[in-house]
Amino acid sequence: MANFLFVLSRDENDAATRCFQFAKIAHSQGHKVDVFLIDSGVSWADTTRDYSVKTTTGDCVNDYLPYLVENEVPIYV
Image 1 (spheres, rainbow, N blue to C red):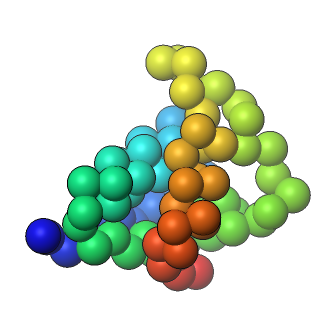
Image 2: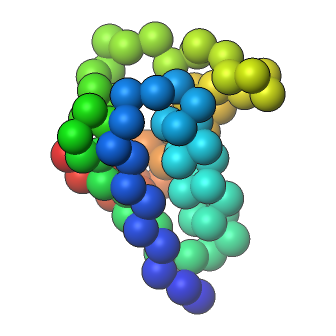
């Protein structure tokens, strides 16, 4: 098992989607995962935000973030 730290520093839908996707993949494979939201990335901590905005590949933050929350993956702001 490895330790993964994902840092999201941008308020960009594509960047956030990939960050949460990679965190979900690592955690689902049994690794320890921590996520830090810094700089303008802290805007993703706003629970009233629309997490269903699609990326160019058709997925969205809402495809991955609920898994992280349900599995109590630490997300630091």
